[in-house]
Amino acid sequence: MVAENAVVELRELVGIPSENPPGDEEAVAAYLVDRFEDSPVPFRVEIREIEPGRPNVVARAGDPDRGSLLLTGHTDVVPADPAEWTGDPFELREDDGQLYGRGTADMKGAIAAQLAAAEAYLSTHDAPGEVILAYVVDEERTGDGTAALVDRGLRADAAVLGEPTDLGLGLAHFGSVRYTVTVEGRRSHAARPGEGTNAIEGLRQVLDRLRALDDEVRAADHRYLDDQSVTPTVLDSGPGGNVIPARASVVVDWRFHPGPVDPEPFERRLREALAGVSIDGDPATVAFDRIQFTRGAEIPPDEPIVAAVEGAAADRGRPVEPFGCNYGADTPHLIYDGGIPTVLFGPGNIDDAHSPDESIRAADLRTATRVYERTIERFFGD
Image (cartoon, rainbow, N blue to C red; front, side):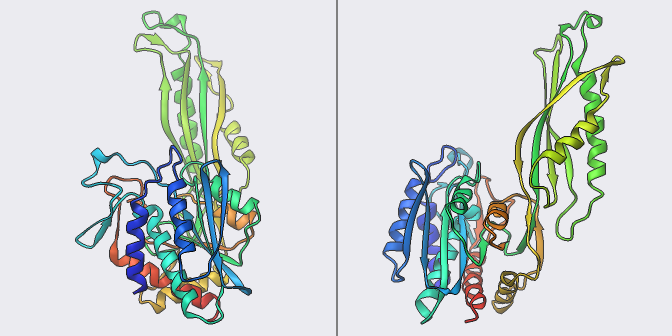
């Protein structure tokens, strides 16, 4: 029954658009508040706006003296273009065992499963531990929703973040830093190339050096994660096909293993890698600007929450092995800023997130619900 409740819950959640941008999470937050207040479980509900019209919702029940377990996720979804979808992206549709709708994988499916699981646990145990359900805004753009929760004092003994891990147990994920690297030249007409200084010639060297830096960072190993990488992703110059460009730039995406907590080491290595770039034998002006920095995160495999999820998954017939996620998440705010050991576990595949006809397997939603419920029981020793 608890697993079927998750399907019903997901239908409601998918039916409430919460696209970001523009950051339209207020309606789904209002639904969750009503849902908690109408629950047979006596949830204590808090609404915490990070800015007007963008509320985090926190609900808790149970005895904190027995410990506290946080189940969390984000209410925002990326925009959906109806023209790219087979059906209405904001109406849950089931076809051949798949549940289709925006946010099914990322990550309203996990929210539905967590809510159903927590309600089942809290309503069937006489002296339950404290379960905290926290659903945040603005994960898809800034991560400010989870940051605000932690900054305002939310704490728990452990947490499960319901990102789409395909029912795998995520103990680590990459960090990322992104730069625009720009080479300066001197503009001229393409018919008179000798009168200009072609910035693309300098950018060619920049790309070669970035390739060498990529080879260098790939030498580092991690027990759960793939190789680190330095990848050019966007090239730009101009302004036209008949102009020697005075400026050429590349956007660089650098993915790194957990550890660094600020961008300074990356900027030092990038500066060293780009030293001495020249155009026609003369030193070139090369500058870089940081676009974004996001920490990676990991927890030790001997944390109690890891054993709780592993045992719960085995109990429910879906054994898991710890692995690393190649995408980012809100985990650093919880682990490092809040001191909350956090694992990633949820239904859905990251490859389906953000895509047209986003979906999860109905069977996986039901399994996730049962695993969440058993995880709560195991964590509190029930």
